[in-house]
Length: 301
Image: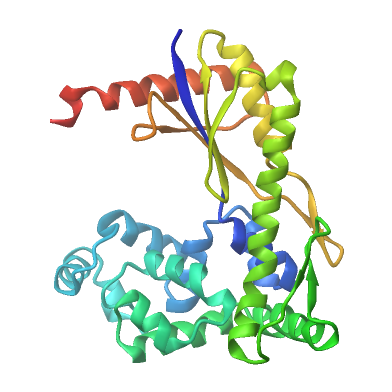
């Protein structure tokens, strides 16, 4: 009997929680209009349109050589160098947006941002300033509210009822720890609850062997003997168990799930998620066969 690896991953999970916890209108708009948060952030920081950010990323991808990147821009996208834009020196604009999204909601300083990403401090300062200009609710909403709660009783509570008490010395380190606690605990608790629900559902998920919990994702293996049965299970996990409805300050939301399948952990393909069993079964099978083909020794030579 052949088993496939299944990987259920929460999409930009902490960033989504920060958006609804802070109530920042720009962040929520990015999510609810289905845009790529890294592209949107890169666009808002640089002043370049989202279309150009996407186009540059397709060409430059993860290039970090400043000379090579400038050459690509000069030859293929001169508009980026001719306009009044803030263009990162060693990243594509989307990559700059991604690094900003991952770091700046928890009050990382420009010096630390520069050190972490190996960029000059002047460029890091612009990233930090422009990020919080794009998303003012992070400081005025999330950070301000958390400081108020810390001043009151030093206890924060996430949407699942988990209470976290902060006993460290009053100051910057305490604040940063508190800022990250709600998004991180919300994501972790939602995944823990999903694991519990999957384990309890013996009828639909009894054949799913959970191998790993990787904070914002669940990985496991399941037989591919019956694609329809596998599709029903994946639909239930993706849309229900690992995507509970959450709420902060009257703002209800779910975190989208990405699903991958493959013959092993190294060779997995993304599956297009749909709620129709037949179509989902076709999508799973197609992604699996693509992953198997890509994993063949001849395809890697």
